[in-house]
Image (cartoon, rainbow, N blue to C red):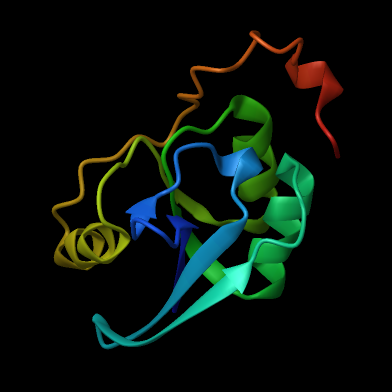
Length: 125
């Protein structure tokens, strides 16, 4: 299984806005243990582009900070499990997820929604 985390390389923290993340850290997990990690460029902005990218790298779980309803819809189309509203170190969040102790949301929590003229009808699908 692969777990993707929106990632800020400089701080090793979870990047807080899904649609604007430039880097993802991908964790390969076998037998509930992290066996390898890889840092990838997100290859572009926008909810559907990011969802396509996650599907292309075979991610089954996304851990992120803020995310809006359009992005959630795009992830659901691929069956990607969403763990939103997470902050702090990416590695620690993945370890908590694997231990079953990560406290997360699975619905929209993007505080920026509506502030920059974005409505769900204008998503980049």
